[in-house]
Image (cartoon, rainbow, N blue to C red; front, side):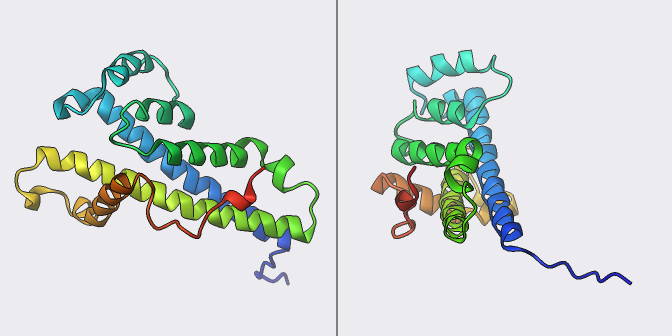
Length: 189
């Protein structure tokens, strides 16, 4: 009779951490894409769009699949609403994860290399959490423009107030907050 118990190898653990990092990247790309789509459709209502954004987003609407790089390039055309350096660094690390990870982190498969891979994935995951929190705060700030009575905001949106505070604090400091000491720079390639 076979046991239902599955034993993870070191390699299984490493691949599960890579999967975690990829999912966190997809969450950031999804919410950033939502913001971009919303700004392209309704941005003029907020009177926060730059002329560059408006002209580039008109052309962008014709692009079927927008990559993270494309989304970030357009969002950076509104410099008061984002932190360009953070977007650039996130896109760079995400591209390593998606396009170069095998060569840079999994070859050769030594214990040291596997540990370095796990460290990168955890650090990237923390960075992704901060990016996601920032973008959720951005969305919440946009929702506040339309609502006169906060009681009318959906329940799950109310829970995003801490994301809004994080968004504003990060913009004021021109740096994502709460990731000091969690730098991924040591994992540069």
